[in-house]
Length: 467
Image 1 (cartoon, rainbow, N blue to C red):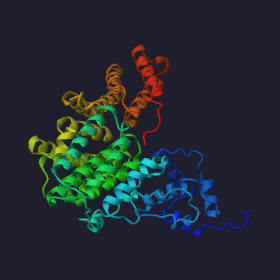
Image 2: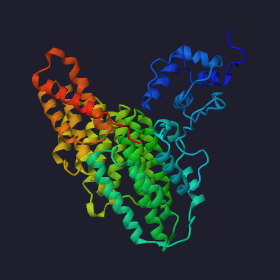
Image 3: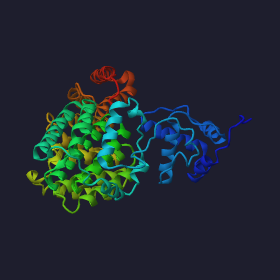
Image 4: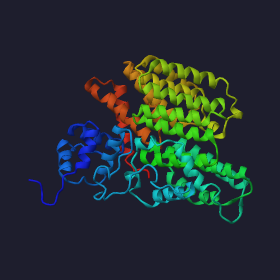
């Protein structure tokens, strides 16, 4: 018998029917969103869905996970109110961007302070595919509200711009060496305090103003990138969106495209190939008017990853060929500073091509491209990506039954991962154990040494989650 006072949730039932879900399918979809956001709900079953429809209220973060799952299924934003759950949700709002955005500086400060002050923020920030469906031109309307909202005080000029760009370069080098979990909150504090103060200042010229907003956008992107590397995907998405608004405020189309490219990479890594493709196409559109060959090549590469995720082999190969042609036209000195800073070139293109070919099932060619990437990259200056590429190379070699080569490259990858705080690096170590474990008693001595080393690394990596 239904408990007294409990009312059947017809709104939730209507949404589930619109999704064409069985109760089992609904539970599966919610569990999938939970796993993606670092939650584990293995006990969630069809009986829970039935209880919710009967009038029970999902606890904790579950209503937001349910809303995101339904949003993905229907291709539109589904709110808690749509699910009949808004009056019972007792957890923080989980939108990917504010429901009523203020000017970009105010929202940046709010985001930064929330990140610094709320210890549960990393868990309550939900990655939202539905947010990616928001027409990106609407952000321009938000930007216009805050354009030229200037304060008083000392005029901001070249010296302050140089200080921010220098700090970004320094933080980027540290990030590449030690991973996203190192010094993330220090950058957030600098962004939300010093840099936000510059953005609100009085500028000597409109050119200086645009340059400062571009510098701030790149720094906000870096926080997003570090959050992504730490598997804080909802947090990363929020910083990427704020970085996009700042780049738009600066009228910096290529940088906006670069940020959209990062969002596309996040989408494809989380298994959302179609979202990746849409974002990559938007990135190319936003930067088309004044894009350099290097920028165009970088954005074309991520479009190819989107095609590969959808198993479109012909389009993938054709798009990568286009990126190769663009790369051959690059004059490094003429490229934006953020392209030079990330070291985009042949190693990056080969690494992305290898991942795309792996997605397409072409393991032999994938191995060749991973080898090309490791052979041409500066493994000292770009330690993390070099380590991850070595681990990916080892993985495809394992799939080709070349166990000796795989273990040799896992060993090199583990060497490079020393003192690194990176969830992606930790995942690569876990993957090595997952591959080697089933060999059991048949595991050769050299492979057993790698497996034991991986186990030790994972035990030592039990550190607090990066916030």
